[in-house]
Length: 472
Image (cartoon, rainbow, N blue to C red; front, side, top):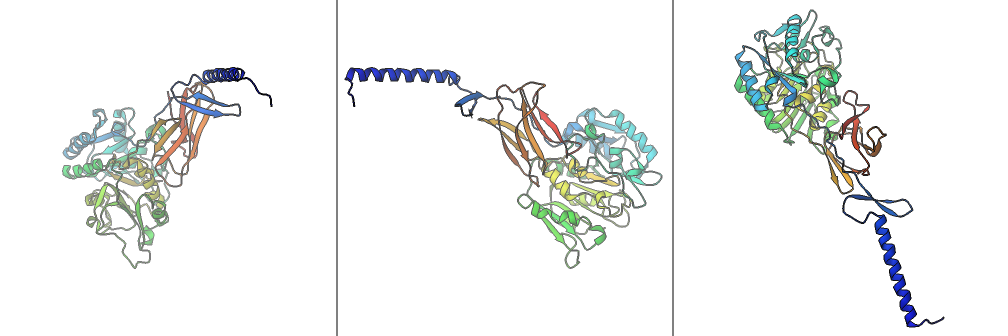
């Protein structure tokens, strides 16, 4: 091997060091100078290149009809109705424009379909734009009587009186497009406003119910649910919906399915504490008042005449008895429905919608496929599992948190680089078969992105995909 003098070796070392420094400066310039700011690293076989990322965000949609979307209907001249309405306005912050005063007799159990048409026209003429639901502040009339059948007054308020929604001859009735839907604005989306009756005859009783609903909000309550298959076979058709729920919700809610179809045990619960749900099938429900119910609790029985207010029929337990016992809402029919289960609440739908953040009126209404004969009573704005979905930036990713996502559905986060260009999907998500808190991650788009969108089940057809939110 040839030996070089020391001076030559030193010159070669200096040249190599200078060349390395030049190459480092050139590489730094090509990478954008190494300055601060979010970036992503791309490796495509030609080396690593830092690309600036977009800072776009958007507001994800959440469940919940609020005070601004609820109209309170007051029976003008009825001191109890007026007092209840004023209290509800104060406790729930209902806008003055949403307090609708009408004239109707509150001593009669029913109102004719002709008189109801006049009443509804007067209400509709006063409703501000944006009202999505209504609350009735009386206990009678509870039903609208036509020439052949009666609708509940809450369903007639939603749909108008139509004989197809009721049938005295034990037949099927018209379905509700709101059933198990993703609509957050039923009047806007479907042309109907779900309605609920407070169904209290004194101000003290009304305040107790209202306070129950208000105190439920955002509590994410622990408690128990009871789903009873009783020894009354004709009224226990809902058991096929009940039985899978304890296993399905095992990690989240303490639901209990009791099968007493053989008649060897009890058809009712008694002495229970922290009751959240109580669904059964009996004409009369003893021991209701022996249980303790959580604020926001819901319960009902599949039977014929629980909604016949104020005086009842055939000795059956009225929906008001459930409120008297301390529940926040109940449901019952105002004429013979026969035991069509789709005329009664479907517990699986109700619990899913409620837990995902819906208000009580939304969850209850969405759980009944054919509600024309059914009277909804209670405090409509109770919202125990209020949800506030978020999309935030963390490093190179978006973090998405929500309990409102529909089970068994697909959602996507997309971006585009021009306001009329094609959308590129950043991430897609397939939700589980049961509602659960979702913590999702999606990559951020490049800095050239000008718009984000969030897609998922359509409000009026959950089997189709729609844009649910987009950035400006």
